[in-house]
Image (cartoon, rainbow, N blue to C red; front, side, top):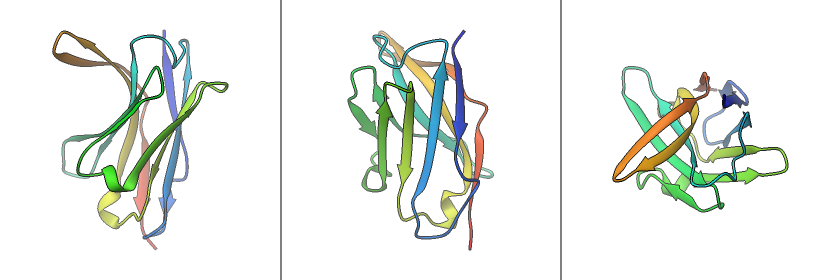
Length: 122
């Protein structure tokens, strides 16, 4: 059973950088062919995929967030990290980390963290 746990500050000031870490247990983030992603849900909106880092360390980002997003990993700690720069109140959301994999042309998220609320406010 794979377990993911998000951690990081719940309150971030506008214009600062939001930084969250996802700690994975029960499975390695270097296991082929999984992707490790960040997804958020703002109040009253649907889920928004932000980006992912692959088992080999390649990163992919949502085009709408690419200029402000960075995902990295620490394989020794089995963790991956999200950084979102220049945040505004519109970045207030519940942030989730998840494990993804592809079957043919379809993508699936089979394990999720419980989510962490991040509020952007001064």
